[in-house]
Length: 125
Image (tube, rainbow, N blue to C red; front, side):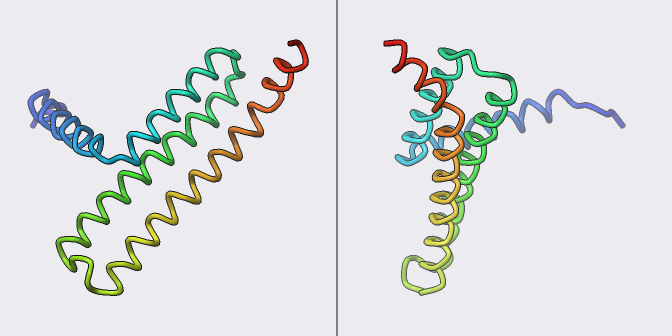
């Protein structure tokens, strides 16, 4: 028995890439990717500290992963109870709420971290 199979790994990787391409079709995911790119730009522009970069990176990952999970739940609910059952709607709404809460949290963390940097730019302008 081999410990590592490159063939199995590459197959798993190709499945993940296919899933990523699928989720890129979701409008909200694309919007969140754009905001993530903006945050990464500001991280590089301001030369943030390691802990600040780590915190913002974790927030980006959290929001993107929750959005993927939200998309998964929406598709499952559409298969099982296509927009008719009140529980299906409630599950979709709760997942959307989870993404919203994470996004608001990410904005708050970003504001706390970026505020001093933006304040310095404005004061030095």
